[in-house]
Image (cartoon, rainbow, N blue to C red; front, side, top):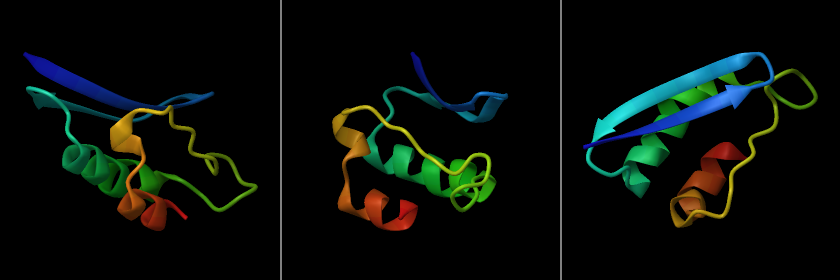
Length: 68
């Protein structure tokens, strides 16, 4: 069994990652920090807004700090 996480923009994929088993909070944090944030820009440029749903792994204080 594998899990996939992806970051998308209106222009297509920004980053993807496939991991064996379930995607946990640490793996998600690593994905955002190493795969997504380097490809994002300050507001109001393209790719400057990160939208997440209310999944528990999206709500860590550490993630909020690095994103802000």
